[in-house]
Length: 101
Image (cartoon, rainbow, N blue to C red; front, side, top):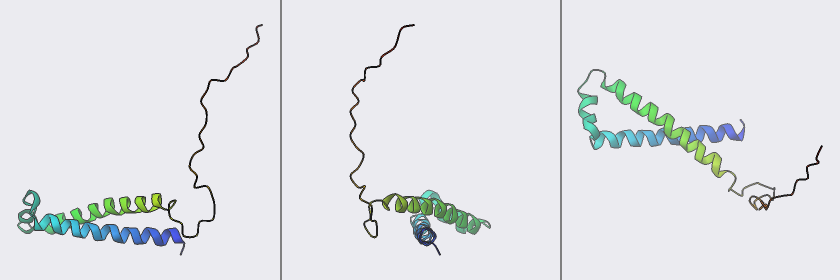
């Protein structure tokens, strides 16, 4: 399996784990009376699953994006020497000659 696929699966698992913790905290602290809505309704468990699932999608996407953006800063097996940043360029005006017709 390619390294990028392994990283993606790992970050998705972390994102959904964070979603489970976040959903548990929402229920524990009864944010917006969510605990009564979930456990007092016939469709409450469906709503709880949807909160978990959609938060998991968001957290997994953010987790993967952070991991990908940090890949340039890690020094594991990177052998190129382009960590000097962008070159500084001068933005002085350059003369342009225009011939008269």
